[in-house]
Length: 192
Image 1: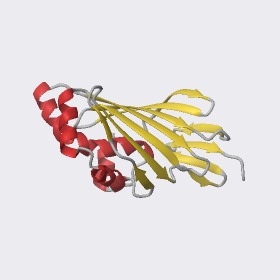
Image 2: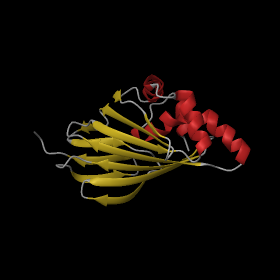
Image 3: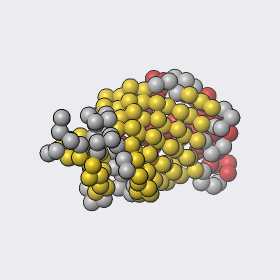
Image 4: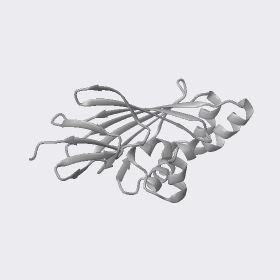
């Protein structure tokens, strides 16, 4: 997986790397400690709900489920509700987007972290066709009219990240395709 290479080389990350780039530093310390104790790979479940607007902006809900109580509490202790630590991690790798990040919400019962954000310019119009960069290994698992569901799995030093991305296109979107060759999701919108 070239995620860590992209970070090391300072290349801009595609949007689908948002969650991993945001969460990797958040989880690195506690997860490595837990993994060293257990000597097994842990799986982090991530749900990303993206509502795309007609101008290429997105409202995003990130929901991360921690694999165990220990990693959840350690991450919560390290970062707490400090929104600015989250902003810094996200902005470092997604500098090409203007981001507004809401307050992080922790759910101790279900070991979840929820963050809402707005990202400007996720989709870009090029010659009448809108494009969103996607990850090379992203898999389309379901599509229902203007809601497409993707799965992306990555193995990192922290553990395995299993991400489900629910991408809601604008109602007027048509000709939606996943371009595996160029790692793009493409669609058309009527001219205004």
